[in-house]
Image 1: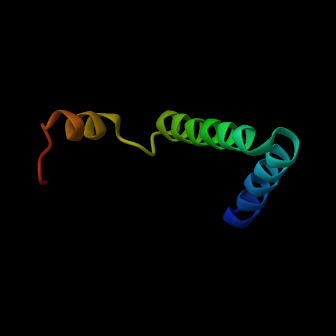
Image 2: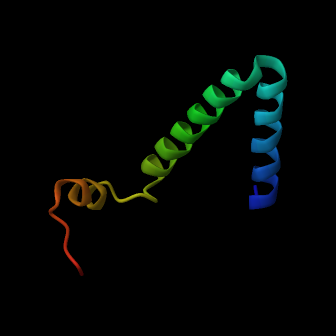
Length: 63
């Protein structure tokens, strides 16, 4: 799937959530979609967890 089609699918899912569940349901669906995207990026290796942990603990390097 290209970026445009992915954006359309996400927009459609959020629009249906807003219509069916109202504002708070829309926010809940958006939060769960963001969490799912983060987990997917972690599993696929696009996010370096060691660098992320190092940035939060203050043990990062400039290289």
